[in-house]
Amino acid sequence: MWMPEYRVDFGLAIASSGCFGIYSDAEKVDRRVDYSFDDYRLAGLAVGNVPAPVLDVVEVLRGLTLIDRYARRTLPGDTRPIEQRGPRRFIATFPVRDVSLWSTTAAASLLERLVWYLGCDVLEASFVPVRERTRAYEVQQRLPLDVPAPFDAVTLLSGGLDSVFGLLSCVGFDKAKQTLAVSVDSHHRQVGLQTSIVRALRLRRPYGAWELPVVHIPLRSRVRRDLKMRESSYRMRVLGFLAAGLLASVGVGLDRLVVAENGPGALNLPGTPTLGGSRLNRAMHPTTLNLVAELVSVVLGTPFRIENVGLSLTKRQMVNRMTEAGFRPLLDLTNSCDRFPYAVADKHCGVCSSCLLRALAALDNSSIFDRLGFEGASVPVRLSTMARSAAFVHLRMVGELLDDVLASKTPIDRLWAWDPDIYQVRKEIPLSDLLVMLRAFRQDISDLAGLVDLVQSGGVLDTVQGLARLKTSY
Image 1: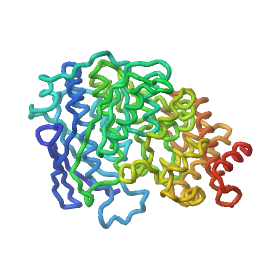
Image 2: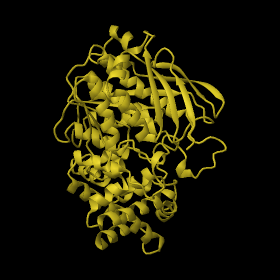
Image 3: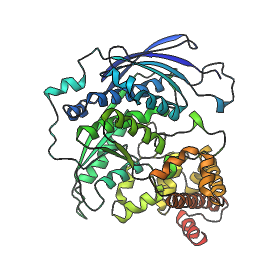
Image 4: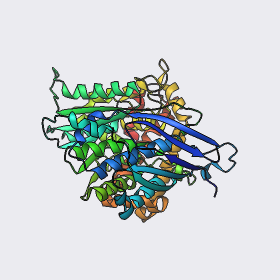
């Protein structure tokens, strides 16, 4: 099957800022793309603590995010069915500090498997010695960060509901621990969102002091805007976040990175047989996290883990735990919309997949619908708009898939038939817990669909009344 082929050259080094070249015979265009990563504060943690091979992994993963963003999956004139489009071939040269390690260990093979798993792309990688020494990690030897106390955990903070749950899990909910939260963003609204969450956790409040020991390192990333040539799917974007997190973890002397993504979101079951391959987001799938962790372990020479603390939970269960621990006010500070930050920061579109999952999570709180959809629109109008969205249709299809799985005499085997990679989950959570989580998610889908149907049929006019009726009918 034909696929676009891209040749990529990073020049002397994959530095904190610079440009890389990308060329495709199909496009007949030779482009130079400028980029910058504001990682000087993280570099201070790395000095003297992070082995050179781990720095190589960080930069190679970062390089893959750049390639993924500027290598289009579908070129003009492609008439194949949409489910057949997407795979690309990357012929890339990566500058690294230790070339022999990438040629004598499993590192290169793991990298190729990771690229194939995330986007069904073929990577043909070669490695050359780094030839540039004016890099952030070398410069920061003169100004290393002063870490006042050892950290118990490092986690990623995006500003969404799941990442806040992960941060609270690191501080122990009821037992404070020193936690380093790392954020990577590309828009100033995200910076403000993340900062407000951390500030709320740190401050003493009259009605009950949280005062949690959280250190926050926000990092900015910038890539030249080129909407005509940019790829929208961006399946490998997660590698940039994970690279920053693993650099921080190794830098402070830890052997694990904590992330948080609810189980249904991490597994991301396909709603239809044609929804797979490059069309399916596997950013936080256990297979993705295991491949990255194994890659770091190989170059580090010691075991390294990436732990998803939300894998056995639905988003609704996350919210319940946060509420029980007294952190419900934090929900109003989070943003879950796929259109953020391009939409208004304090509103959610109400129709994307993330908004629907957020509605499932906070369904017992009718005020959630006040932030969904257009300002001034009534709840029935918002729910009607939600029901017409493609994401809502997909959610119902996932519900039908779960009905098929859970009604089977061998549900685990049926689940693996849909997605064999879910087999990896058995290493992280008991299979019985997996089925409990999927049943809970199916119930959440039923609750939301039931509420939409009640309001659209005219059976209820008030969201609170609809929620009360749902609680008695399910």
